[in-house]
Image 1 (tube, rainbow, N blue to C red):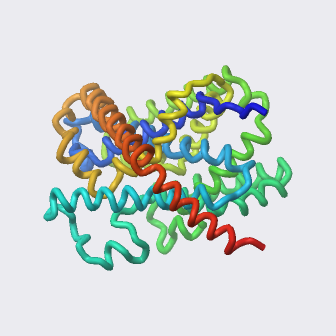
Image 2 (cartoon, rainbow, N blue to C red; image 1 turned 45 degrees about the vertical axis):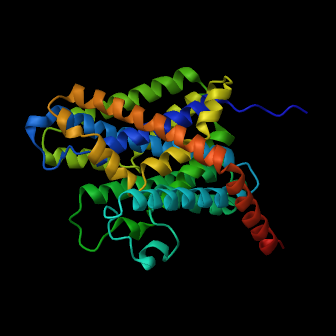
Image 3 (tube, rainbow, N blue to C red; image 1 turned 120 degrees about the vertical axis):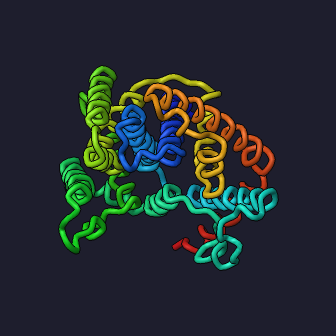
Amino acid sequence: MKAKSRNSSIELLRILSMFAIVLHHYALKGTFDWNPYNPKYSGAIKVNLFLHYFGKLGVVLFVMIGAYFLCEKQFNFRRPINLIITTAFYSFGLYLVFKLFDPTGIWGTDSVVRVLLPFPLPSGYWFVYSYIVMLFAMPFLNIIIRNLTRQKLLLLIIGLILLWSFLSIGLQIFDDKPDTFVDSFGYTPTTYFFLIYFVSAYIRKYSGKILNSKGYTMIGAIICVLIAILLSTLAINEKLFNGIADLFDVNSPLVLLTSIFIFSYFKNSHFNSRIINYIAGSMFGVYLIHEDSFVRPFIWQNIFSSNLYAGSGTQYFLFGLLCTSIVFIITVLIDIMTRRIIFNNLLNSITRIVSNFLEKCTKI
């Protein structure tokens, strides 16, 4: 029986999502300091604010793509273990490279305790941690999904959106309530990934007329993006900038709605490209390399200086596209050459050994 080919449209979206994340890091971690608000740089500040939205959109879409496929698969240890080993490979590998060529530039990580405890990683990644937890939670999330009717799953999603989107963002914007915190209601980046998982499962199981239409989903996505652009242009002072930035956080209802429309559009499009499918396999590698704690300041502070182009919103944006394209292409090539060619057999062997061991230990 011929294996079903991967939909390259979704793999293309995976690539675009990671590109959006890298572009967001250009805005977030670059030398241009948008805070405090300076009217002299209003154009660049508004572009920077939109890139906040754009990057969070990339995060939600990337998780949504993975969850869409995972929600109907059987759990195995290979997925989370492979991601853990890949993370350790890049975290230690990049640390050792910087330690070798710039031994005085590694900030405060010479302590063995700091490097190895409470788990052995010199550099941390919040996104990867949350994604790994989601992978381990996958069988339990799938049990919930299988045992809920369409109405009850929708009710669960609405309830979590009210708690982890509207309420948590409201607490950020109106932050003067004493002793009231967003995590009091269960919101963390990790738990929000669970919400994205449920949304993805709903799309896969119960997509209706609107989400199954390329026309409707394109219109919905365009309207959402235009709203984000409009909100970005309203940031004419520091208070408005901070308030709109809260609306553009990863748990924003606008970000989630935009992601649903964009993902559904790409899901409804179908084509096959071996090149796109192959490049998409390096997207976690792109994240792990460019967002490493030691690589990140080297890229956005030492190599590229966004502050030089802050006088013009257009120049600031175009320079960001150029920087992001360079970083993206180089990190894809590094991941292909190192993880997928040179160390491929070694990493796969370690993954297989550890996964088989855990399968035996947890077999009932």
